[in-house]
Length: 462
Image 1 (cartoon, rainbow, N blue to C red):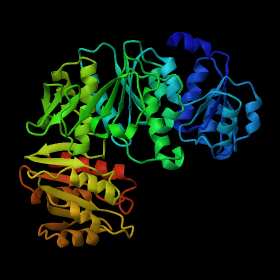
Image 2 (cartoon, rainbow, N blue to C red; image 1 turned 180 degrees about the vertical axis):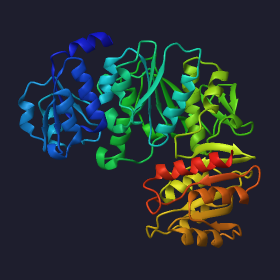
Image 3 (spheres, rainbow, N blue to C red; image 1 turned 30 degrees about the vertical axis):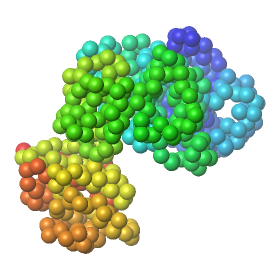
Image 4 (tube, rainbow, N blue to C red; image 1 turned 90 degrees about the vertical axis):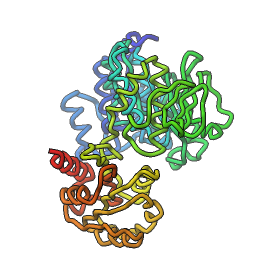
């Protein structure tokens, strides 16, 4: 069914939207715009529910709030659109399935609403970075007709972009396992699974259930579609099959039929063809090599040139506050990883600068929540100096001293940390903000902390 036909088909149909928040509000607004008769059910009481109040006042929506009355399903709804975060054990969802009422998530509707090309990206890690990277790359590719829009789990509701997309446009959707479980006919032309690690097992019930939800991305693909998979994890999927053409990628092994990274030459490769060199890509770490390879595969499948791929990725400095490349000043590269509010996140950041040529000035500290930081010691091989701040200043200073560092400076504010790190560094060094701590002792959130860091770097470069 073409998008125009589907849009017309929902006119005057009764549809139940279960759960609001940003996605649910978007679904209600777009279905109402198509002439559907929408009922909203949200657990939060009306007097505490700003989303519900807004829909009543601005959209004249019918809202049932404060619980999940199963009797509501006695009405003759055409289908239910479930907020992705609501589990399938919810009594409304259980009852809907018992009576044969289709239960969808927003991405199923987005697919039906548009004739644009859909590129779906899922995986345990790297979804947001890869989606943003592909959006940047395709947006700068002049050889492509139409527009490229990013949305989905990245924070932009899928229907917001599907509703305005034309047939020659592209939707680049970050897809969670929660969203993919609620699909029936959803069919991306290009699908990618970045990697699979244990996650959300409470929601899916088991690792097998989680993998099956991810595999749903390819359930309706045909031989004319493409499925990009991590060649180093093929065994994870067992005997699951796809009709799509499988395109492998690997940062460790040669892939003659896919995308791969040549460790010797530091080139990103497509089959036996050099696409561009690592020096043109600013994001550090093995995981970002894999994210880039997914982007290379998507670019080549859409037939954009190597120059367009290189121009797009060289302009991409990362997702804000997540190992984001900020600037290079006098040979020093500054990275903003303010979102690293725990040890695990900072371990990932430190491990991203583990090559022999890396020399890191590490900015760490923040709220002291009483946790140990000693596990970070095994990941400090390339750290040559530290600037520490915040409530946990002494804890991180002690960590640096335990590793034999002689250059450790204590400061109060992030602006002082930037100046101290620059003075401590030399051309060729990396200056990394990865606090391994929450920000609340000094800043309302990690975004404000990261923004202050970026501003201090900009001021330094003036």
